[in-house]
Length: 324
Image (tube, rainbow, N blue to C red; front, side, top):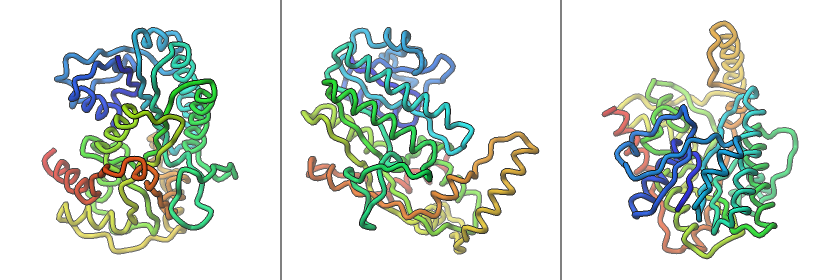
């Protein structure tokens, strides 16, 4: 039987949908207060198991009869107040999964990391798997937590665990709604007039799940793979979304000073309203980075693998926005 952690998340639910479609038995891990995603509601033969990723003994029960594990559970936040909790979930939680995989002699683990755990390119070319992550005090908490989580997997590999790590770029898809990457689409839908000069890597959620299953079924172990369909500038991404939604295309490039001023106002508003601000120091920094990633290694290992063009994903997402 297959165990999937983070089963109610954006990626975890898509992964389970694809595994179920192949007729595989799945035990889906979720917290007791988490709701089952709509795309999984009609799949009655999924075995749901309530356990917190930080509850070792509950996790141990979830591992009974398990042979393969997909570790999708993770906390994503760019707020400094969440850093401590992110380190616990993304690092300590991963350590528990690795230890249980070893003690239960699991056949294979596929661990979901992030491009945030990769180092910066030293040649101004797209980042690859061999670029070494070096702490310099500028990394945000999410990056640190995902890097530390990877270190736990590599520790498990050194102790004899068969494992593969995937480093997806920004994962998009219609079922994200207005959360996570869906916020980018919703931001444009609301009618913003500006864009930032940075760029980012993008990949469809269906492709990430497909690659994970392919890696699980392969003999490959002790490797990590960037999963990235294409690198897009924020300018082109916002323009494509706006065109598909039949709204004005953002035409103004905002400066870092202007966005930083907006951060100050957002912080002030959060203090008075008590609401969690969406704009943070780390999101401002990310918006101005030219983040480029190469998936050449993945295609070298799987030359027949094709990833969905990002323009197609954007069409699917904007169509969903118009009808939902």
